[in-house]
Length: 119
Image 1 (cartoon, rainbow, N blue to C red):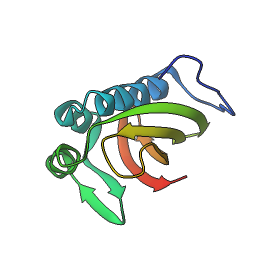
Image 2 (image 1 turned 90 degrees about the horizontal axis):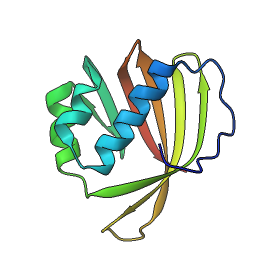
Image 3 (image 1 turned 90 degrees about the vertical axis):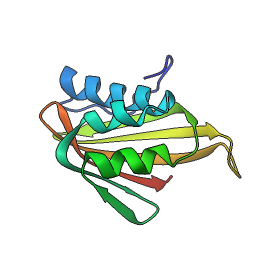
Image 4 (image 1 turned 180 degrees about the vertical axis):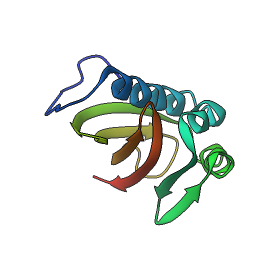
């Protein structure tokens, strides 16, 4: 998830949790909507800009419509199934780069939900 990443706090984070979150960030960096959607459980969801996108097909459509970004991970925090990543998103959009919080809820080795908010 980026070299030189500052680990502010990491509690009970399994290697599978780190792996799926890292894969999600890699998919976002590659702007690969298919790869990102496949990391979610079948009824998984993404909340972004106060809109919820539920199910893999909806997640694919949502992400395909977003601008291409490159994420610079600033911090990670984990507790049980909840994982938060704060990252600077560099892209071709007004105000770039912007910093966001990506709050992941995991179900085993899949993503159940992600909420994206400004940091």
